[in-house]
Length: 396
Image (cartoon, rainbow, N blue to C red; front, side, top):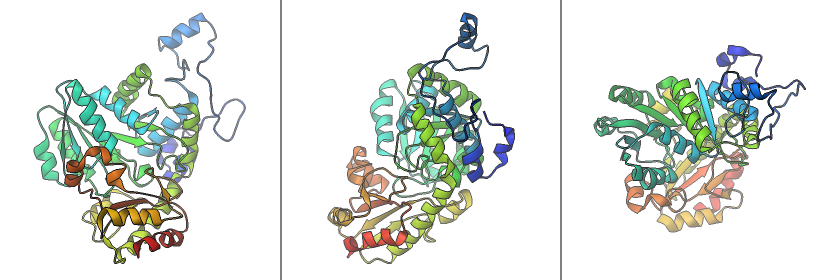
């Protein structure tokens, strides 16, 4: 593994993304290799027995021990300021692995009411069958979080910024609430990544990622990750992943490793483009409201400045004219990709109420403020003037 030792923890995000957890074989390759193998050969029967008994280090089977996957895990852990990371087949597989590891019948999860639609579906449609309880609160209402905690609350779960309204959750305050309740705090750091925000340094216990988004950065493959301490993540979540098998493939891990090399540069560029686009949208007559934490009138603008190094690349906005106006704008674009994915070099545009958050149901969307007039743009790395020019005809 890396010859740099503990110095990598002191490097800046850009250097960590490129140099930390470097894996090099005796062939001395400069770019990380892909270990596309399912199993490994042992020196002897005794060596195999020692490996399976965890008496000596080494690789056993790529479901849970693969050099490329471990390199990605170690690099992401360093960038998040964590001790351990477990990579999974998708962001939802990461959530599944975390919940199965932490929760049992009778436990309660207190979550933000503004979550990715599949997350809410996972909570309400599947884990409730096993006797786990869920309740939801306004992500920015600390009083609601405090009063929502129960004696059996095991986990607080939130995205920040939220999808798609870009609300900012006070991570340090939530960490304090969780600690006093004897619960854990998990933050979905997908939108800002460790290049712009490190929830563990603000008191969170766990961080979760859909690596499919900005960690890859080019929309090439699917993966996820859970980051945290050596016990809960390095031992317990790893044990679940080893047993249940929602593992990340070596090829996808290699893609994510290469993605981390440019993460800091990309996140700065995404944020800069999004800021310009948000400021332009504010001036458009067809736009009713813009949701972007970089705008001075955003309700949590000061908090965003305090707990992150940038505002991210997601800009959402309500249009005058409802769903019809939203669809007309989306269909009028020629440069932007009409897709629900985000975190790509290519800008994407979607209608959250009918795509990413459709499975929430109309009542839940209304409580979360996700209306039919809402459009979400994941601002890419194209020239921002071209992005604006592509949106302009549909706003006339």
